[in-house]
Length: 165
Figure 1 (spheres, rainbow, N blue to C red):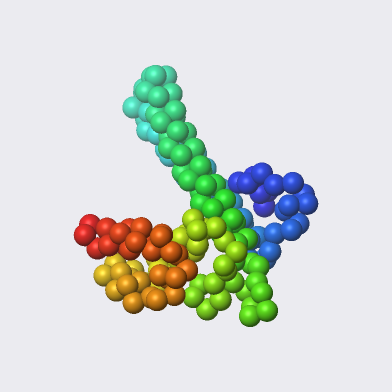
Figure 2 (cartoon, rainbow, N blue to C red; figure 1 turned 45 degrees about the horizontal axis):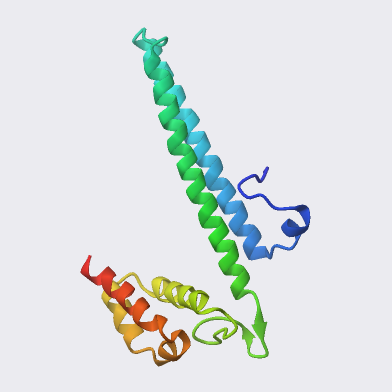
């Protein structure tokens, strides 16, 4: 498989952990699937136009442009998500004498406040799909109050907004 979803030097590519490599491969498969689906959609449209004797119509060119734009948007979303996952995984790959950094078992106090916010937010977003249970658990988290400081209220408001929608 040719990997072109992310631009990495050979040195940076060889420094990826097995988990990060799996993320890159999964993103590459998603990108390849999106490109294949777009080509299939354009081919089916072309065959429909041929069957209706309208293959030389300008509609096909406009439809191809639309399909290409949608596909590029999907690929960019996959690329952006991969970059975020790689950066987040790199944050969690370090550790101390108590093991790898992981909230709430072994929080990383060397992170900036905004990075701490992301770590705690991701922890609660992955904990459960029920917004109210997520908010209740966060409200009882005394470590988060101390760990996040002034960002505690911001995250509380964010989690509460999911309950009202």
